[in-house]
Amino acid sequence: MAIASPTVSHVTNGEHVAPAVAGGFTAADLSWERCQEQAALAFRAGDAVSAAQLWEQALAIAEQYFDRGDPRLAASLTNQALVMRRRRQDYQAQRLFADAGLAWGETWRWIHLMTPQPAGSADGAERSNRLEIYDAAARTTFAALAERGRATTAWLERYDELPAGGLAEWLQIKPRRLTDLRKLLAAVLLIAPKPV
Image (cartoon, rainbow, N blue to C red; front, side, top):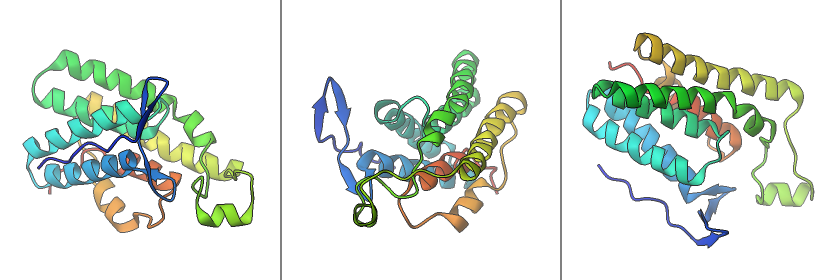
């Protein structure tokens, strides 16, 4: 099951920039989420081959379009590390787990800049010309959520035991609005689930 790479609108300073799709989300944002969700579903159903292909695509999207502190990059590194471990490529798995741990550790910057309203959304433009950010209590909650992703990565690295409820939780609470919170939830909850 192949998912096409996001369409690139233009190149700025040598870097590819994905076009905006809706509510501040880009094609890369939506493609990454779709890859992660389908990979988790495939992995839970026992289709490790399709899951590995989709996680590889998600990692390629994350490395090309997301900043180092983005929790989606950390989640993609975690899932790819699991794939490498399952292929008995221990050195690559160890390196990817280490990179994932570092990436989770850098998510505080990304969380600090999270906004309740996507940049450029119609609602936000009508209400104010300034970019709104979450208060300290909300950012603390989001940091705890990112810590859950880091802890899951560390647990997978040490014990190779998969989390049970992330995918089910994601399918139950997946926000309808395309916001930074949805990106964070997808990163934390769509780490390889335990097969049913």
